Length: 299
Image (cartoon, rainbow, N blue to C red; front, side):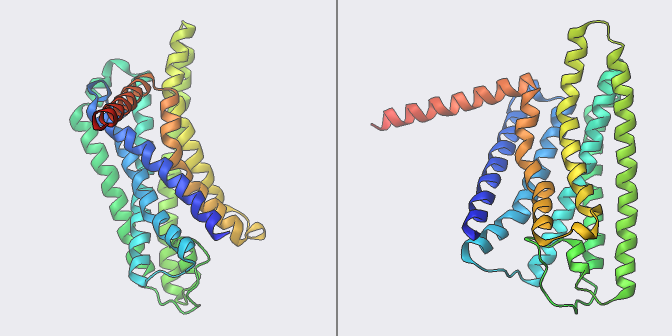
């Protein structure tokens, strides 16, 4: 079973590394992909890579060597970077929703509202909010005395499982307050996303041609799919009834919202982005041709 987990995590992590690496290379190298949407997609790929590299390597090491330990410092670092990348990712998904809203509902103002400076500022704000959130949660969580054992029951260091080990009532309330504040922010972003898509769908339905409606919907579906997967798994993991909680279910849900979405982003975004597909096809064809040339020249 340990080896099965190792090979499962290895396959998912390789898919995520390959997919997000291809997106980063395509957006960075192709001038046709230097648009606000692809700029934010590049940053989203960076957060996905960060999430994978934060949690999966240590889990794979433990599964392969049949160990279940992590040092206190490494646990704190893992929690910090995981919260950092996940918070930044949700902020970027909210910004990408705003990008689609402006592109479809206010196309004449697109270059004004989403110029290069505005995009850079929004991306910086997403990363800064993720850093601040991670710093507050990590500092507060690891300031609590842990006296209820040292077994997390999870494949990576996660705040709820660490709080179960604490015996400080005041610290627990402080962390609960921080989590409540973050949940409120997430809920506000979720309401913004829902409201934006209501406006988007209303604008799309007013487009007279069927081809125009299809094209407009196609630019929104990848983002909507990623947001749906990200939010639904995270909400169910955090709000599931205690009666159905179990170690195996907790593990499966954690994998679903922390590991699977980064591996799916290339597939989701390439399905509806013709320019991205063409660039990826050119890159892979060029790499394959270069490998064949090197092989035959070596022979």
